[in-house]
Length: 231
View 1 (cartoon, rainbow, N blue to C red):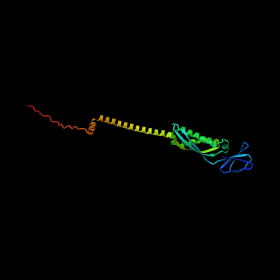
View 2: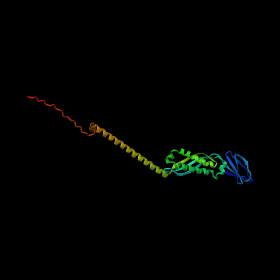
View 3: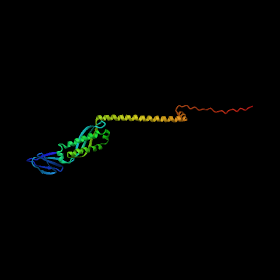
């Protein structure tokens, strides 16, 4: 935004193709000006705006997720002037209105999500920012075509907590795997005991196959009975 006031010596103003302007004279808003060269009455003040699309960068801020993890997040938006008169008269600083709207939308998006959700789908979070920001921008004559999360980092303290959580998760997983293995082994032993109990011969065979087992072989031969004849 730039301003020009017509005086005794300078009463002409030229607007480039990407510029629009609104005139003021004696405290009254005048007409809108498009590209071209104009001769203006004295004491006419001209507020000139660049209507080309530009980037508005929102600096990083620390926000807590719903699971109380602190993240640093910044954003970027594509902004242009949609209504020159509103952009001049609705607010002394239209960009500041949009900037604050983006900050508020970021807080709303992150404080309602867990860290996992924030990290998993930044595109969805960026999409959620556009509607509230566009609404605020329209009120001050601007158009926001895009809002996106620019940088997203986890703070050092949060990283330490996450590392500890990950370590505990690995420990829990290892304990669970050991427990599963022990349960499986117990079940296998119970099944084997049941089979051996139902089949004693199988138990004897198993014992005979064990290292160091002694096998007793019965070599006794049955003798035929003597026949006694009566005299």
